[in-house]
Length: 250
Length: 171
Image 1 (tube, each protein chain N blue to C red):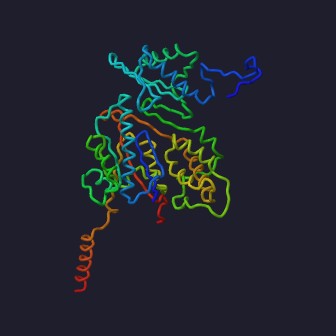
Image 2 (cartoon, one colour):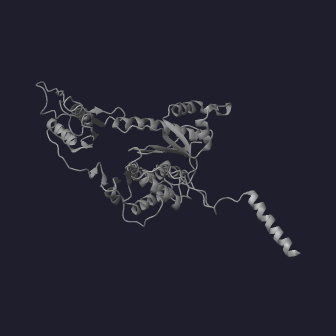
Image 3 (cartoon, rainbow over the protein chains, first blue to last red):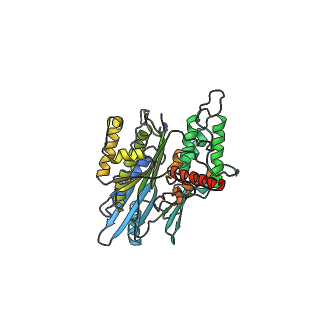
């Protein structure tokens, strides 16, 4: 970042070197500095939260006397505060408010970093969707049921013709697949093999994925609580590996 | 071969093209299992910090019987020498009761949707599980009676009955 020489210069005409005491919006370090500030506020003695070792953006507070728990999640300057009682949440909010110059409380979470959150209090579920982002992607095309044609081979390289690269389109779809549309992971990794100089089949593949999205706009991830007898969070994993992703023609 | 190894975990999905060369299918499956094991260890630690301690070992579902056998038994041989380091790492966590490895058939293996381009019916079933069904354990699909393969004994019995029928009518 360069300072304007005519206003900020020493008597002999040399430019001054300035040390910033606060971060400026848009600087590379701004995010890190803000995280340090939030870390200092939340782990101070008055509130005594703990920063998680496994994820530096999550903070926890356990009050053993009153059996109150709270979790705070940071995404630069967007904060989610959750807890099992209103009093502990309000305590954290008032503590942060007293330490920063301005903070707006938007109430219950409905939208966070571009993801819509819908809570069903009766069935105790939480649904994450990205409807506005998908609607922005393309015009209303005829919907399909699967993101790619299972009988096509999308991996062969193009050596005869020259086509414009597909990185922009694939990047905007990657944003979805990393968040609420996990089924797009395979199609995108297949299409990305020839993204620099795509064949016609790959260009059509991207259209196919967008057509699949128009049919499943409101589908998202649903998180539900385990049964009463089960543990609250039940963990299990599945693993698989495959060499040829194309489906054999019946 | 550079196959795609994918694993899925409640709260965390990963799929990527393998960066190293594999020599056998069991090798690849073990690689995927090893990567999953690493993220399970991370997830268990994170859940512990958030106050949701996991008392039971976490289940890993795999559709490869050979990988399951290699990872759960101590029968290492010269044929599995190239897998020894990963097998030992997985063994250690099985003994520590962090993970349990179980076999699941292809019908119920939801991660198929991240490794293969599927036709409509299995795709929709797996997508439904992926999007909505993680509150419950994966359901192992049972083959219907009509779909079961006819065994050799049953075939022989049927053939004999037909012959007897023919013989009785001839006389």
